Image (cartoon, rainbow, N blue to C red; front, top):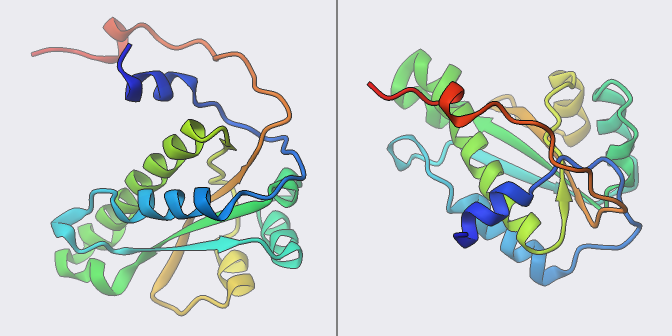
Length: 171
């Protein structure tokens, strides 16, 4: 099996983490994966915050409807759209392209994390204004993803997937 496809198939949503820090070498790889994600017009309308401070993680977890596993993760990545750059494409740029830019970058980072023995989970359920306030974000940045990152204590089995024939249609 191709290496990238193998990692895609191995990635799982992890919500239980060891109390072990992510090495600086791996953090650098995660950062690289984020900036090499594709972006609309190569405008790179995104910004990422790497959160390790326990108090900040507690505020983020509270804003994320008390999803306390966020605090357990040694690293929490918050992906934000940058609406100043997104205005290049008008409303569609702000409401769609900037979100797609963050999503592409985060997915690449999650695959690099998996490849390096780390678990991640995409958290989309959170109150944006509270996360923005906790991080002191300027008004042009909008948090759209919270991703806890760390070494997993266990790895769940792969959940069922729809058949390719149901998900993909050729015309």
